[in-house]
Image (cartoon, rainbow, N blue to C red; front, side, top):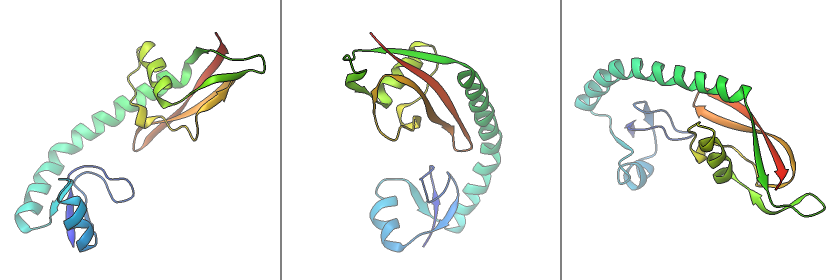
Length: 147
C-alpha cells in the first residue's frame, strides 16, 4: 500500500515522503497513530503543495542545526557528580543529565537526540554524539568530575 508520511519515521522515511508499506502496517499502526494517510490523487496534490512550502523551512531548520552544532562542538562541558575513591559514580550519567547540563549552558537539545550507548558510570572525559537534524550530527566533550 502506498502511503504519505505525516512525520519522519526512522527506517521508513521523512515527512511527506510517499512510501510503499505492507497493508497491515498501514492499517494497524500508521493510520491509527495518525502518522500517515493513503496516497490518493487528492492527497498527492496536497503533498505537492506542501512540499513546495516546506522546502524553504527545512533548509532554514538545517542551517540553524548546523550553527548549533558548530557552537556546541567547540565548547567543553563539565558535570560534577558524586563518586567513590575508585572514581566510580554512585549513580550514572544518562541522556537526561546531559540534556540538563546543555540546558544550563543555554543550549536546547532534546534528550532523544543525545546518543549515549549506555549510561556513564566512571569519572573521565567523554565525547558524546548528538544528532541535531537528520543530516546534522556532532560530538560534545563532557568532563565528568568528582563533586
